[in-house]
Image (cartoon, rainbow, N blue to C red; front, side, top):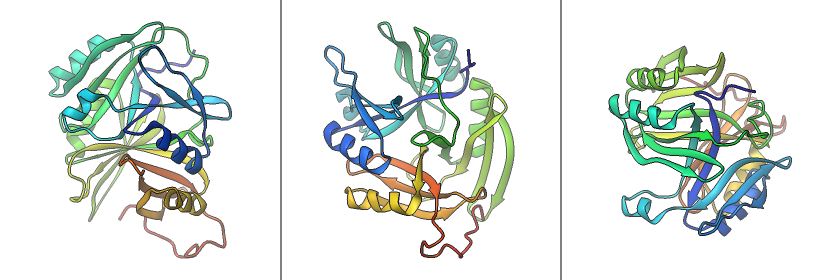
Length: 270
């Protein structure tokens, strides 16, 4: 069985309109959907090649009262949710939702790091057959970025909590782009956030085929392109977006040879 300790293992969109969100993401990312509602809670699974890859639910009223808006949440696998939540508190983070059981499915907790970037902890209560696929699989999350004010402090925190290791870093005019690895694999980066981003956030990149076609689907489906397409070092292209309900997300894919500007190489990190 794959060791999920410290790895992102699930993703969930909390939004104000489930029907509209399902229509948007099935168009943009080409996901399918499957109903997984439980008594008292509507829940939809997004699927890629018939495999569940993320979830969709209504933004809880308690979250709305604290000012939270629609957002994507990443879940990190841990062996002990309660102990990890306690460790996060000791290190200056906060517990927003205390460790809670979803009967027969999981124990989870929603937490924030010391710079107030939110994510969740999870331990499955039964073995899962649908483990994360390779990072480049269609419809999966291919990259994770933490946009934050202090990259060194953030990496130190996550190393203490999850055992993440420091990779190479690029420091340029726009700040730091610090790679991190989990279980020997590079999983994402911790990035100096632009001044236009008001607070620290996690940004998740969904794999698509043609990045220009996907960006057009974002716009035609009522979303907005915030940045891109921009080329990254492995030859892929990224766009950062906002969906019609206000949740921020990103896409990563290839660019066809006849796309406008294809021959103009973009400096990825400077």
